[in-house]
Length: 356
Image 1 (cartoon, rainbow, N blue to C red):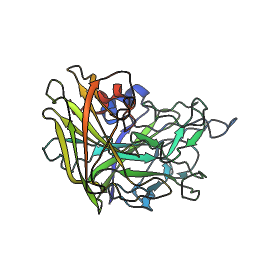
Image 2: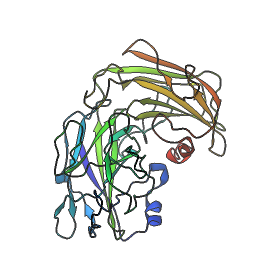
Image 3: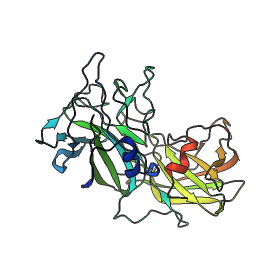
């Protein structure tokens, strides 16, 4: 089920004004224009406030059930002045806002909040600013007008739960799909819930307009129970802990602990053996991570994988398809590595600002 909401009009905002409207804790979402898809192209003219309308939005292929991969969002962008459909190669940024306003908050079996900012993973186009042939992480700021050519993400290693650039019309390397004259992207939710996906247009003059779609992710038919325990410490209000359960797509269920040593999710996550679209990914598998913060919201301890101390992730073990368990040993945080949902440790206090 998909419903549309209209985001506030933003008249000629500067980048700083956009930041005020969209808190960093929810992730900055914007639409930036590129100078073109090929070398020597002429910069695009102003798009005069491109926008989405409900009739131009549909989900085709795959399932929106939690854990499934292959649901594909297709949509047109229209010019406000005359509703003309635009299919020129500008970039559409899509962001997961987490829980929709009408949805009750999700909690684990100890009544602790499950934070949903990183629960949805996207697959779309990317930027390749350094020209190494690998897509960059989605930038926090709107892309520069001179940011360079579009580059399609390669599944499944470059899934990004933070945000994605939609495939541009005529894209020829969409996994498992023919070129389309519409914008689009794949998405996958780790948890069953009702959440919001946000789109925002920004033309060369700085005009911006946004739309929000509410999408319901029903439970998977086959579900698992997962327990993650902190082996050598306990969370406290002064030193809280976030426990993340991630799949290989970069989608995560993140649980906030202000006390205690474990989280338990019973019959909520898709079962690990659940098959997904083979053209996009392998069967579901999970890892667990934990991050402990001090009073300044700085990460001071992280989980350590006993088999590989250079990594944060600990595989979830147990009888296949039924239960999973991970015991996390916490060690002093060093460096600024990426988490299992593709955020840097230093970004977590902004990503999950509502937890603090």
